[in-house]
Amino acid sequence: MPEEDLSRITGRYFSRGKRGEKFNGTGRGLSLCEGIVRMHGGGMERENKEGEGTGIIPDFPYREAA
Image (tube, rainbow, N blue to C red; front, side):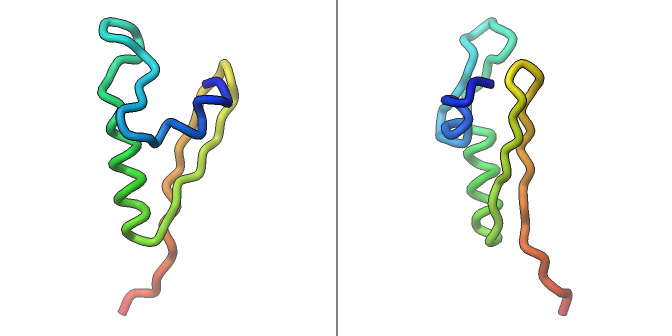
């Protein structure tokens, strides 16, 4: 993924593809995921190797069970 797109991938309705292309979709999935992770006090880490792939890692804070 181009670096200029990496900061926008969790934005609402960000979609890299057009209907019928390999990467089509509504662009809502990562936006919803990030919202859920943040509600739990976490964040999302992004790993990108242009031409190879992009990884999104949710990071939830550790809390001891009561």
